[in-house]
Length: 537
Image (cartoon, rainbow, N blue to C red; front, side):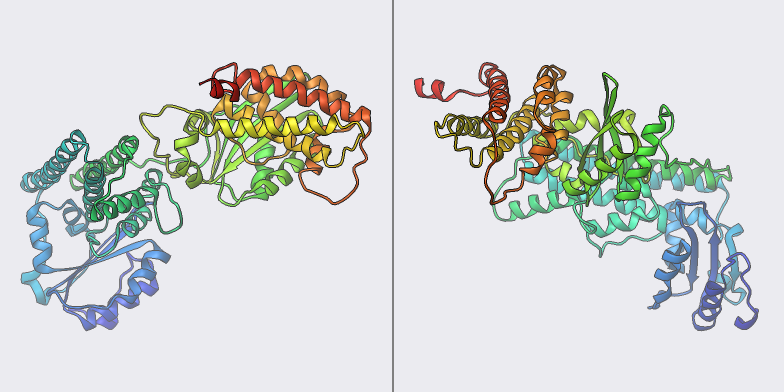
């Protein structure tokens, strides 16, 4: 046997890890060391086979995993042989003779050797079939719970099934299971070696996920004798679970091919969106946006050419891009091209959209589609957990419409003052314009926008229904830039109003036309009852 000082591990190509292994060999009864280099995103595997199950401190393991992308697995002899006898494909592939980089000949009886595929095949099939059998049994139980309307039990059972899937993936990718960790931690750990898992769990913070919180709420409700009714989330949970099952199936198939010494097929997932039409204006806009904000994805949901101007409508998926940032970015984009091109930017975090799907799913589902995705920071952003079935509805439309109507009547009341005291009228006009746009957009698209700039809101009205452009002449005839004017008066100031009768008259016409438009849309369209109808009832 070589002395520890003379041991060399050139296969590692890592001096730090070589030194640790030399020290480990001198301190512990190590039988074998296996090492397999894997392509990214998979972790390379370093398996240390010890004679006995002894407590070993591995403070360096995390460093090796994070810095060198190497998974270190300690396994004692009896467990190694037992796992292989059960048919574990992880052991069968990563502990094969060709992967040995150290072997202690003095512990010859404990040395592990794999068998030929023909002798191992039956064990592998049994191992895999046992997983599917237990999986299907749990699925059958969940279907029965759904039929009984036991919502709490459905979600807690799904939590156990997803945990079962994750445990399988842990064994297939790392050789260990992490039952002491909670579900959030297990998901997060696996994303380092299976980045695709990120696509199936929407995060509400860096440490938690939307679905795991849903499972927790169901468990807490059950313990308190309460019930949660989120049947519309069943399909989304099912989709997530099915994707985890698919990942396990693919890993089984891949290990099976590698065990049979067939070349594993490497699939490169592009970070850039391919097969999109080239648009130099759009490319420059994306570059400018990325230089100004940290964005996960960008979707284009409309491109409109009206007259000599082309307007791009973009949705940014980002955590920290508020209205002020959007305004700054929009102004920067406009400064590059003047009046020939324009941009309407919306921005929401992925978790905000997920949390508000019950209100706005109709709008976002139409936008967040592959054909609309023009930029992504990586290929593994999670798909949303869409609610199924889902019917769009105008929640609280009565309040939005009534607020817009009331401010219009307040405007008319001040305008009709015989003393022509127009104090505050400019702010009322701005408030009406803002209220009209948001309500109009909501009626047409089932989406209530944030407090964007006046121009962006008006452009969203045009997106919602191009027919609204029939009032563009009023916008163009306004004595000043109406959008700059209304943006200016979104903030209250203590000062005298300097409006003339002619200016107020222009405001009056706009308010009159638009409130009539909204009345026709909402009241005559029978979306809500009018106050008069309610009184008659």
